[in-house]
Amino acid sequence: MQDNRRLTVSGLDAFAAGWFYRGRIDFTGGANAGASAVVAAHEVGVSGVVLTLEERPAEPLAPGDAFAVRAGCDKAFATCQAKFANRVNFQGFPQIPGDDFLMAYPRSDGRNDGTSRNG
Image (cartoon, rainbow, N blue to C red):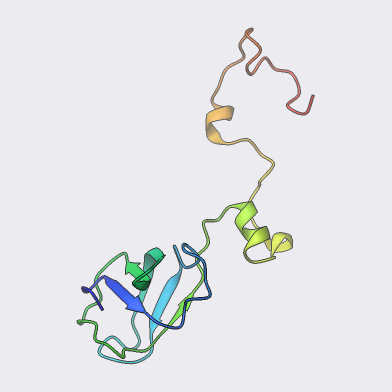
């Protein structure tokens, strides 16, 4: 433990940096047992694996506090497909253009000229 938001943890060495970004950590032992937090960062370095929480837990963290952590999701179709192999259950609309395209107006310079995007 480094401070009350950054945890140096063991047992997560097999996961690439960022795997738990936006994930959830549930404390199962220690003073914060029953509490949950969102993972703001997941780093892997020479000093070990470090999880940074978005907010400080209510009680100070201590070595040996038990937890369970779930992988994070950035809500992108590519992440759903590659990270979770769950493309069929993706509930977004990956083929629809974003707000910036929808708010654009037709132009004669070839950009957003009204022709098909597939052509």
